[in-house]
Length: 131
Image 1 (tube, rainbow, N blue to C red):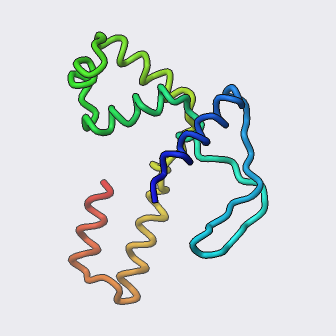
Image 2: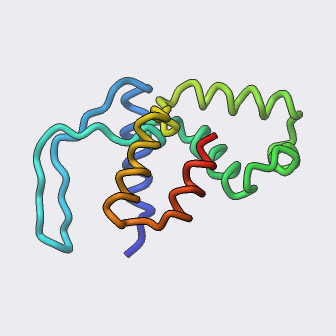
């Protein structure tokens, strides 16, 4: 089974939407004979323009090498950086480095030590790593 016709249909749908919001209300998994109805917002990366998705794919395949991107697209470093910044600005990021309250972390380590979950040596190592 090839995904080419589906990809073309999806691209056409995004073109018609002209960058506006798109809500999917029905999803069907034919192999499983399952249909789900509701309100689904497509992932942000799928909402990028085709050109931006190609750019992001090339960036990932180059392992983030801007030098390789310069060669692939025949443009300068500032042009690559500007495009990356524009695409990044269009995406909503989820904060993954949430600050942890050191006091509660120490308390957690001591609680784990007290319950026998970790050894004294492990507790010391974890507490020293927090400093």
